[in-house]
Length: 425
Ligand SMILES: [Zn+2]
Image (cartoon, rainbow, N blue to C red; front, side, top):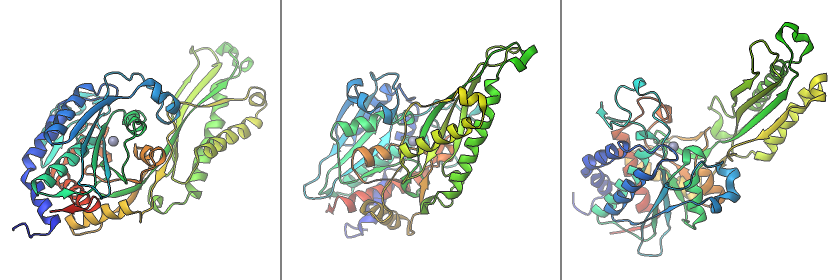
């Protein structure tokens, strides 16, 4: 096949030609731990890989000062130092649409290493898959970007528009790096995040609110418990009332991309602390939980809805009427976000996927929060997600990504760049 071959075919060949190198890069990435908050060592390796791919590369750390007005969106940060974000740029010839490619470089903890078939940082290959923490979520996505850019170079494709690759910290804990990237002025005509979507096109992500509920009781010796008021017993009807609220929401929420999702907007109580002694009636209870939102819902409305329901339940109980439970919203409050399914970037990703695979991609929403919301809501950029790997194995032992899918995602991204940023050559 000469240079006359169609562009998707040329780019696919270029991606295939670097298969071994792409696999090796992901293995190397997986071998450098980068748990949220401790991304520094890995960021240095990423910057090196960016330079080797020919990108104009800079790094920067988010500062407490610039983030403090936005803490509601990303949550309190334990630390800011030693957590560089890496920005790489491939300037275009001019005149084309620009794109920002994003991948987060942090991962969750490896967890119990004995639950893994091999070391969580092995980068081992078995059955056509690369294993290790971060392989799927989402060092594979970062490698996708770099391998796609390499393929463009190999195929002699020049772009009119600029490509920016942002490798960012802190996604698992609210998206510190993505937010800082926007605050530093990085913008493009669209953004793509290669989170593991099983090669589905994802134009919508859920949001979440984290609450803390404090219920007061009155302590007494357990031998004369009727003289006290158990905060635990007072919490139970509130918990049941919140469950009813969850079911009502599940039944009434309507969004075309969420029709087939079981937990559209789950309300889950994840932590309960009560009492201080086995034979003392508990005088207080603290419950913390998480409530999901779907695109189209406003965070304030849902906060008011939950507060109203708690107040209604309290009004029915003489003790709770006198001692109303306190409801607070803690941590990062993550807004849902979406772009229209027929927006130019969504259509361009679908077209690129079809050019590579011969079929239309599945289009679906996800119920979890991701950095997509920062790009859409704060950055004003249309943003979608598309990548190899299954979120079902992310955050779990034996996390892995399928090499064939990784290559397919890479081909799609290469074709997307050629199309979106208007290739020449
Ligand atoms: Zn992720």
